Image (tube, rainbow over all chains, first blue to last red):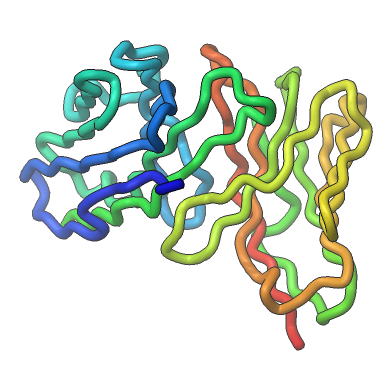
Length: 115
Length: 112
């Protein structure tokens, strides 16, 4: 089966600019996650969707970050305006809500550099 | 405060030896704990899940233990190979919505 797709793979922007990342989860996976992974750290959850509804966005900096999952499939994460500290890899993951191992399937990530 | 700690940032071992990675946590009571492998430039890949009522889980050369009294999980790779070199992340169910909380990871290097 095809894995989680993300684009772009790399993005360099200047601070105060805006950027958007796209994710296409594995077909049939109702749950979608966006994580931020800063160099040398583990992934940190930003937002979790169940179908097209938000389950948890408690760690999403809502003054600058937004995310949507229209039609319960693809998702877009946006940062506007970007700050230097937003430089990180943004990972998208998907899962079956009640899978036997609660396994999350990750995409390759988008590496964002803010200069 | 709640914390997840993986014993070291880096672990270097010789090929053929057993690698042991540690994950300690405080102020969580997770129903399960997972281990993931992450290679450079790639997303994490799921390896194993162990539940709070399980002491040990095995998969091929991998073994995971879970001690809820010590609040610790150990991850073992037996007969290690250079291809096992990667960063290994532990993750536990700990968020307000039952989300995964990840440790920082341990970078394992297996030398031939």
